[in-house]
Length: 477
Image: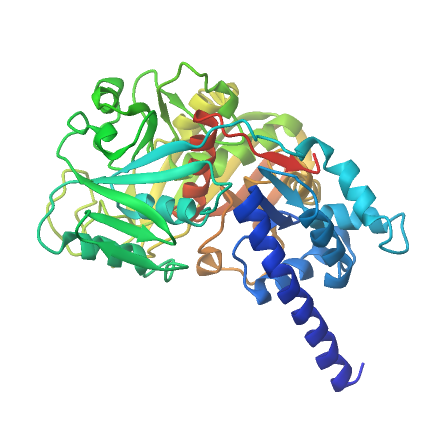
């Protein structure tokens, strides 16, 4: 191909991706439809991101999916009344082109394939959400909910509860939401409404409420009713403490973004979210590490069986540690986080059993905090019931990442060059690094990356939706 043809090909792809973007935006804002290409989300994707998502298809199926081949499927989708679903146009397009030579039957094909999603969820009411605390996870949850702004959005961020309220606090909170040293700038516009003590982000009015205790807020004063309160503070972890939220008028359910104590259900979305009952008013979304490893462990156990194992977490430092050496009540955590690797405890291995009881008593765990601000890795060493090898394990996990019900939790990379910073912003619970997999006989060692902030927050949103009865269909099934 000549240089001119390369440029012409690029221009064609670029223009096709640009043509897709307004259709993708309208589908989400007006119908609650999130479009993906083999699991890669196109929501708010740049033109380049759309092109890159298509390029990855060859890795999955061994052949290209050109944008001119997928565009008719986006166009057909925009003409259907499908609602509240994720639609993988990559999979639909690849399946279609296996048996068709032109696009003349795309609309008929899409109507048939997506019949279940037509007018889905029309009778489901929108639900109010309150963020109690506004640290790393709270701000990312706010970003994830705000990006869903639109008339079809049923997960409505109504308020943020904070301690304090000193002069200039509102502007500082807005600035922290607007700019993030790890995750980059906020995708949109944020305004401060001093008179009403609120933030307005991409048209979403968010009431800022100051309180020192979960039970002292009257949410109904702000027009908030039957709300899910998402506690991001980590201060209260048992039923007695988290139950204080339910004493506030207008609050009906509580979700903790940390492992819970006692009998509170620890839920890993994609694994045991169906354990959540309508009567469960307090639920935990477990930890970032538990969310990263449980889907992979379930997948491995389903096929090979797990006798026992050990999980070593190489975890980025967190706000709980000290920037420089200073007193800390926990062992070793008082030493400077940006300067040291710090051995510490993790409850993730034991917590797996709360979400996936089959592995109770089978795993041990430890953690090393390392001088990176985000993205962690779990090294999972397993003794299996059945013998296997590296290729079989990798082929199976690749299939699970692309075709199974865990496809939104497990990602899979074959890159020989990927490093932690490449995975900032990953929306998956965990990413299997296939190049590092070791498997022989009854032994397997898996390396699983995870964005311990953003990937975990995406998992939390899934639990929020489940608690509020907001179902999203995955199409094709």
